[in-house]
Image (cartoon, rainbow, N blue to C red; front, top):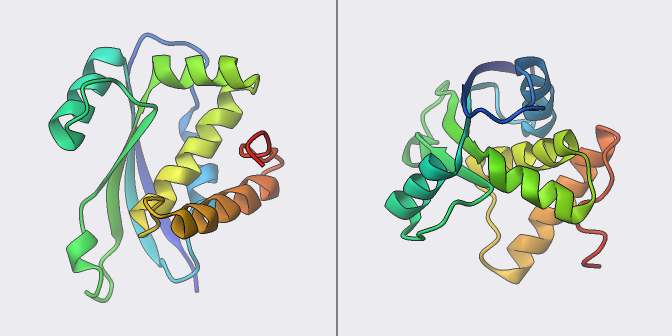
Length: 156
């Protein structure tokens, strides 16, 4: 089954070294599950202020987080032919800080968070331990396919 992926890439940050559209396209495509035939995803990179506001408004947590995922058609997933629709928002300063702390390249961290967000858009979650293990295992496998090391190896 052929997959169609359309992305929109928005940068609302002065940060440097950010992924480009081609990189987001490759990472998102790697994370699309086989049954997804079409997807329209917006990747938005923001600074701390907007990241904190979005996290506060939508999750009730008053701090900027690395990535937020917004699924637009979660309740309509049974409609045939409807593409996967959503936004994945990255806070540039948090992503950069984490990459430095974890001693990984900035782009590898963006790749991981892109795959993580894409899996959320497709129904994966990590609220329960078994869900987290399944999601982390899939992320690790998908990242390995891109030549990126296991981001959870320190925790294991």
